[in-house]
Length: 621
Image (cartoon, rainbow, N blue to C red; front, side):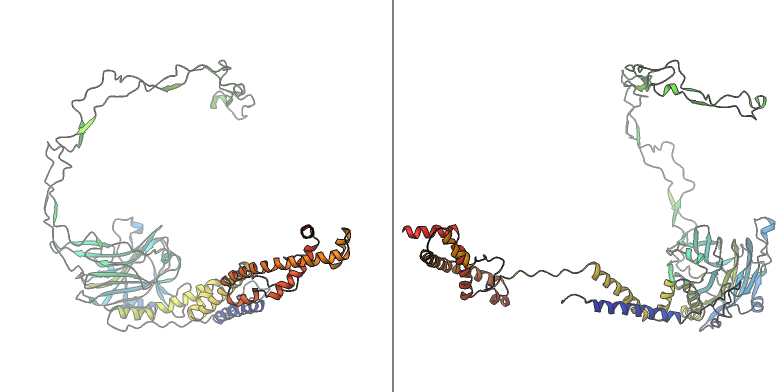
């Protein structure tokens, strides 16, 4: 039937869906290594997995510092371990004696990849390295980028870096929390509080002091960074127009202006409150005061109690005055280890008096207390507007003697070294692929040759852990598989709709039945000729009279048939105007059809009471 899907077509669609699903799964299965487990052995033997070989990135432009930690020896040549002690803490934890190591990740995605790993838990760590050349804020962007991997997650600790100020006498062996820095940047977490620090120290041009300026909190939720145990890329960009950007995995999570989006602001206010100003003694800050002309009404009784005894209360009938509400438990037994001298005289625990259960109450009855209708409380004069009200006093504003205007906070103190000064309650935090440059494209190329490759391989290994992730990862490598997945999902939906929600075809308006010689359900069934002939006999009339009556009846029926034919033709003309043209010929009966239909009706009516009455009328006339 047009508009319906045949069963054969549905079967074909089902087979196509199964074939497409098999094709998509086979495409991903080609990328996975199968592991064969031999029965009867205690440990499963896994074939050696060939991992991609990692090649250290190469900078494609000007850089001020790079390190991808190729070996322990190169690390010791470039980085300096701090020998300082942290001030203001207990002696046993004051030393920066946390261990560092250059090693492979615990879950290695690429062969030959090494990183700098913070190895100690609950220790102070400090290590620093000089830049190849100082970075000066002379009109080009500062771009800082590095990788962090929390291999065991993070309970409480940071993975931020400090860009140490290039000042005379900078000694990396004495690097500690008090060492001056220009910028601090990176992730930090403790409990449920996660941060992505961007702090820069601004120099006051008036007195030369430094003040920390903190960027606003990022919009991105950083919880996954600390929990998914994957390698994440952190990027900071400070532009000469005083704008800054913070990116995680090359996704912008925070941006703003050094002038307007840091706290406290770079430039102090032009005016401040006068610290020497004081409020005058006659300054009245009361907006409302008690009406001094008001007096207490004479009938105001301040001594009336709030509650009084209900005078209408009566003791309920059946109240047991002589019974206590609680009585000693008769079933209680003195403990065997009870010592009267040590514990005192033993008394059975109290229980509700069983005699009081059926009574309205026990013990001495007293009437209940009700609110005193005469109680008004302490009289107070109504409040009116204070005619001497002057408002809330504030000290006067004076010019700020510390005011300055620095319209270029980008021009910070030059950077001479990079350092990691950290405390962590979780060990095995891995750092890798540091780069400091003045071109974002250089940092992007560096990330493409390092972090992009590692994150791709880490995602591949993670995707293999579940069917859904593996299917998505297969489509990541072969985008055409998305078409396959859509088909696999769409075809079952079509089948479900077809079987569970079949479309209902609109019913065509029933056409006017064509009159033919064949008897239709609405036709009167003609009686047999023998029955018609038998009717006059039953009435006691002769054959001649029956024949005469039949002729007369036929004449009458012919006249009525002509009138009925005219009415029927009029009705059919009206229906033909409403019905489609292709149905008009089918519904319009011919004159011969009408005559053929009228003959059996005439015969059928001949034996009816109506026909007999007409015949009697004709004979009477």
